[in-house]
Length: 134
Image 1 (tube, rainbow, N blue to C red):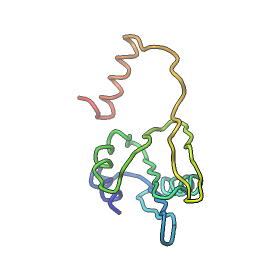
Image 2: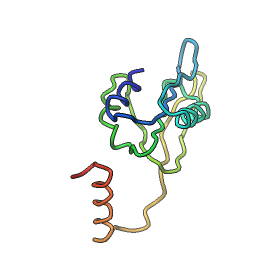
Image 3: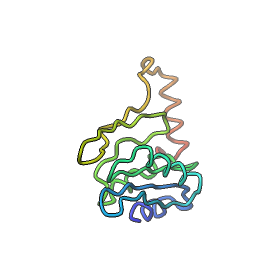
């Protein structure tokens, strides 16, 4: 509920889905959100990863991770954020007698080169367009 409150308090009208894997007690996948599609994606990914004390947060357009990262990091229960991306990714999971845990995330492909002046301008224009830079 704290993450839900942080999201709606940060971006008015935000569309998102959140799924949290409990590690003890009922050990259910708890979920909430404001958009059915995002909620479904979050729940399916949480089921696939199936690691205790982990959560999946799926954002709907036009919100980008940069819009909510500070608020998300400020939630006291959030200890670590492995990635914030729209890239295809893989979650590295370990399983022991004690349960399952996330070791890390593979996010994105290797660089194809170094940006030139044109690509710098593109990047800066994009950041201005999404409201990250003035």
